[in-house]
Length: 150
Image (cartoon, rainbow, N blue to C red; front, side, top):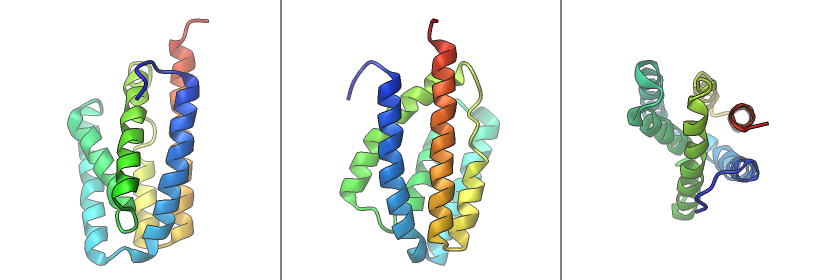
């Protein structure tokens, strides 16, 4: 994994995340069980609670990662998980960089994604997840521009 951060790496990471996560979410949604949705809801509550307590803390990032993984888990296998864990680690570097300049703007999107998951609506889950990832990427790019010298 590269040690330096760059705008092109950020764009690549989020393009890959959209490709992999949106496809896995689309394939997962019809297979959500009631038990799985209960786990997803519990992870959402943990994400929202930890964000309210300390949006920079490890507990928040663990809950955030768990939510995203549970969303994809019915379809995603070991290789998908390996790839995503690398991409999530790369994303996190940019999120940590941006926290200094602005709050993480997309926590509320997770509830919208969850509501689509409850309906087991593959198209809506995919659309909301894609929107979430695009908005996050745009916010991180804005933070990058704010952070970078002119």
